[in-house]
Amino acid sequence: MYKKFYRAFSQAPSGSPSSMLHMACHSHHYWPDVTLEATRQYWHDAALLADEKWGPIFQEKIPSWQSAVAQTLNLPDAGQIAIAPNTHELVYRLISTFNPSEPLHILTTDGEFYSFTHQLRRLEELPNVRVTRIPRAPYSTLAERFERELHAQDYQLAYASWVFFDAGVVFPELVRIAEQKPEKTQFVIDGYHGFFALPIDLSRIADKAFFTAGSYKYLGAGEGMCFMSVPRHCSLRPLNTGWFAEISALDNRSGKVGYADNWLRFAGATMDYSCLYKGLAIFDLFRREGITVNKIHRFVLAAQRRFLHSMDNADHPILNRKHLIHHDLEQGHGHFFTFDCQSAENAGRLQSELKTRAVLCDKRQQLLRLGFAIYHDQDETYQQVFGSE
Image (cartoon, rainbow, N blue to C red; front, side, top):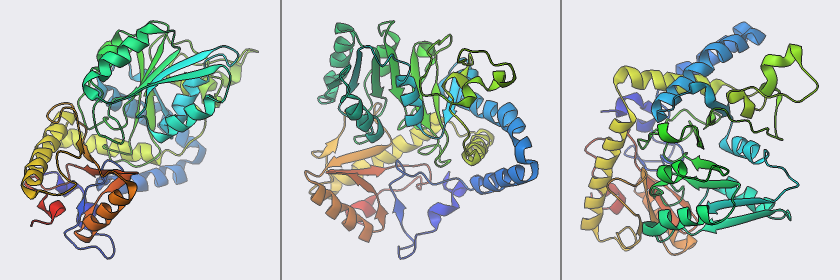
C-alpha cells in the first residue's frame, strides 16, 4: 500500500538477498522517493540564488515546516517551533538558561538517549548540579513514581522520553504529568521516537512544556532537521546562543544581548537546509496521499500483531514474550520491539543470524531492536525473522 513511495526499500544492499526485510527503521528510516528531487531543488536554489536563498528559506520554507509540525502535534502557534541540526543543540541551549552560579537540580529517568545521558554525567561534575534518575522499571508504576518525585523536591528541570529509545515503551501519562508540573520547573519531553509514529496532542501543554524531535526517524527525511516547541511568552535567555537569536535586530542592536520573542530565542546559527526541503516534500506527499500519523500507527500496529502471532508460533529461544520488553503492546508501545538477549554477545550473534536470513536490525548492548514501517508489505507475516518461511 505505502511501499510504492520507497524504491530504496526494494533495492537490497550489495551482497544481500533481494528479499531483504529492513527492520532497523527506528534507527534509519528509508527516505521516500520524493526526497531525491527535493535535494536537487535545494541545490538548484542555493546555486541560483546564492545569498538570496535566505529570503525564501526564512519566509517560506521554515514557516511551512513549522506549520506542518504544529499540525502534526496540535500545537497552537507554529512560530514557537525552534529548529536546529540536532535536538541536543536545542536541549543544551535550554540548559544554558539556568544561572551557572546557582544550584541546578534535574529530574529524569534512567532510560534517556545517549546525548542527554552523556551531557548530564558531565554536568554532574560541577558542584552545583544534582541529577535524580527514576528507574523505568516497573513501567506500570513509572508515572506514579516520576510524578511523586517531581512534586517532592525543587527541580529546575525535568526531562523524560515519550518513547524510550532502547525499549520502545511509551512513558505512561507523560503528557498529563507535564500538564500538572510545578510552575517553576521547566519540563522537556524527548519525542524523537514518537514523532510521526504515534498520535499525540500537545495542545494542553503547549505553553507548559518543551517538546523535541526530528526528521531522521519516522518522517524519513534524514539527518539535520530537528525542532523544539517553545512555550509562548517564554523569557528564558540562553547562555549558549547564536546570531539567529537577534537576526531581526542586526541593524538596530542595543547594548544588551537581545532575543527574539519567537522560536529564534532558541535558534543558533547557520545550518544546512537540504533536510528542510526533504521534510517539506514528504509532508506534501503524505498530505496529497492522505497519509496521517493515525493511519501510519494503525498500519504498524497491525504489523506488530502479525509479528507477535508468528513469534508465538515459532518458539524461538530469545525472540519470545519472556524476553520482549513491553508495557502496553496494544496502545502504549512505540514502533519497534526490543528483546533482552541477556548479554551483548548474545545480541550480536542473533543480529548476525538474522542478517543471514536477510533481516536487518540493530542492537544496543544486550538489547536487540526490531522495527516496523509503512514500507513493509501490508500482509507481511515476519516469519522470515524466525526462519520459518
